[in-house]
Amino acid sequence: MSANEASRAALAASAELRSEASQRSIEKALKAMRRNGETINVQAVARRAGLARSTVYRHKELLAKVHRQRRTAATPPPAAAGHEAAAADPATGVLAAMHLRIQQKDAKIAELTRQIKQHEATIARLHGEIDDLSPD
Image (cartoon, rainbow, N blue to C red; front, side, top):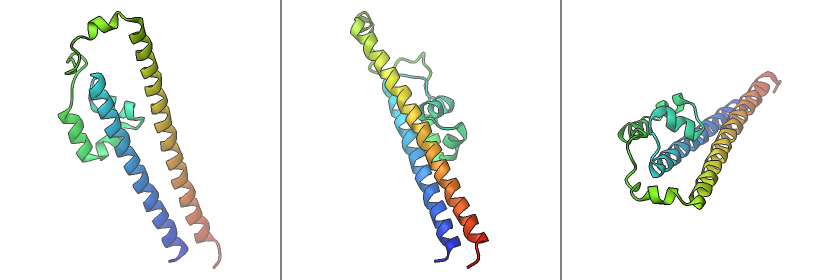
């Protein structure tokens, strides 16, 4: 396998890893949004997954899933009954704040992971260009 073929293979593998990571992020975001009764639409899912909207649109099967599960915040989640009484408990507010912080940290981790994958792809591409320019 030549250096060019190796570089192309590395780029293809990197792209596949990024695609799989994006799919996992979208699935995780949908699951959390359903559980929390949040608004489900492409923009909200992309934001929650730490991805661009175009990434959600590129994954056709997941886009269809988003459209099937589309819900507005006004639609109560199925398990929302009885939460009004629990909201009066101060511990519930603390838990909600902690869950929000965890969600924010998860989103930040997803964004940093995406950036790392992008940098790895750039490095692989540049290695390929170096191999093209260097005499054999």
